[in-house]
Length: 198
Ligand code: FE
Image 1 (cartoon, protein in one colour):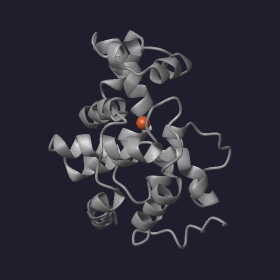
Image 2 (cartoon, rainbow, N blue to C red):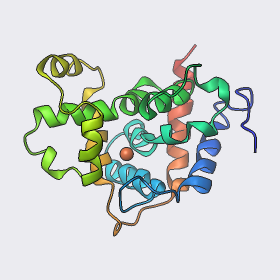
Image 3 (cartoon, rainbow, N blue to C red):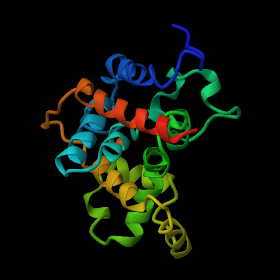
Image 4 (tube, rainbow, N blue to C red):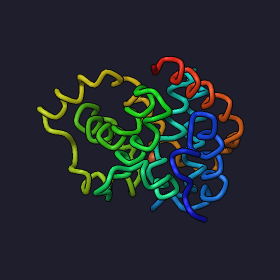
């Protein structure tokens, strides 16, 4: 199947488009973890919902790893010279449809792990083995200057919270609602962003 062009991907179709990715590719493994990709993303969303997070933040939790599927998006959704990191690519393909409060959580979810490792003494101990392994590849804990800079992120609280749900959403024993449960919520976040964007 060839990817649709951006003309067919718009605010009215983006939610079904993402739902289709969950349906077709959600069963793929989440590298080194005990859960599938869709289980992982749905668990993160469920944790957000159960904690009373806003629909914007629940959407961010649900879509934080969408960058693993950017090859599903039209070629022109991603700037040339790709090989983007999954967090950058994910934020980029969603940027036309979602507010920065969502895309910032996606863009920074790896940096947030490095930030939390540097600022929360209890955080490192609850990372999964796979996550510890990637931490080293991702640059290890932030240094003091990086922490100071990152702490200025306008959506810092949501970014950090989504990261924590990301880390917790790896339990094979947990069941969640499916994507359809979240689709209306995502649609409302997209519609609100449309209204706010001239
Ligand atoms: Fe994740």
